[in-house]
Figure 1 (cartoon, helix red, strand yellow):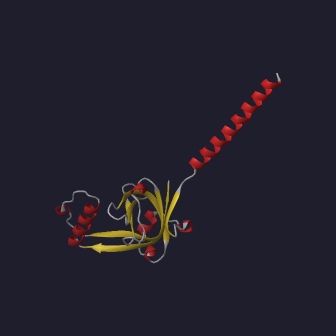
Figure 2: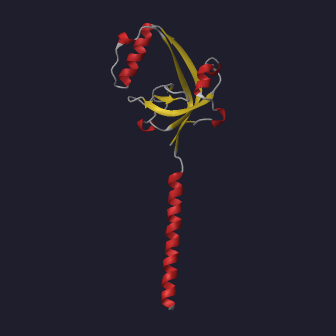
Figure 3: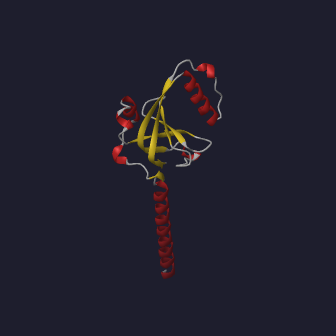
Length: 166
């Protein structure tokens, strides 16, 4: 009888240890993993992208933090990412000088937070065609220059710090 009680006690102890290990593993797996570039994002300056684009002049000199799901990444050098915004079918490009930060292709689908400033560039028809042709080449997609019939304004966000989160 004493041996039976002892065996049951040992089995219960082993079961408790296994449950503790499983709980620790589950909590570790459940934590969001973050990767930072530069100084990372300043979450105290968070602004919706639609707010930023509604008043672009204000955010060209005032640093802010934007967020969005990464939908595209530069395939050549990882120097830019397109973020889906808080409005359907709208995206904003975050761009850094080549080599300053290298965003991985694995960023697609993750949430990015970027702290920096907005820049505005007005393009005439020829510049718009050149810009869109360059983007198509980077993405290895087809582009028809005849599809561009008017100029466009390009907004880019220049970050000093970026945080990627799962």
